[in-house]
Length: 96
Image (cartoon, rainbow, N blue to C red; front, side, top):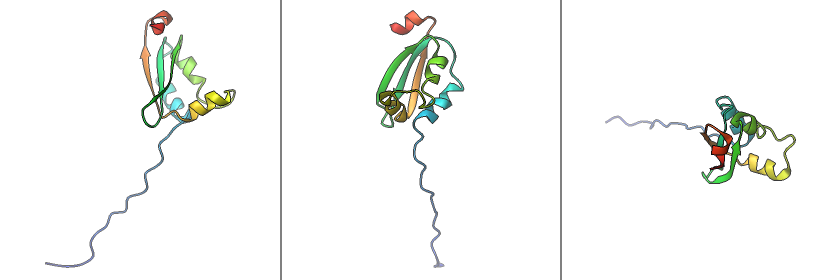
């Protein structure tokens, strides 16, 4: 049996998870302008906020940048790792 150096594979360090406004911007590309409910989740998958909107696209776009956000909301946005959306026919349905 031949002996020699054992091949090794270098694995680059994994990139940190994308969180914050960049996550929101990614969803905006595909969000409809219809009414609905949205949930913001942190890196552990915990729900950090639930909201309703007359227009999901318009409402969620408010979180796409820190400018104009209160400190409390800016901290929340900074911890967004993913979002979930449910579209409905009317704003009243979003309240249910």
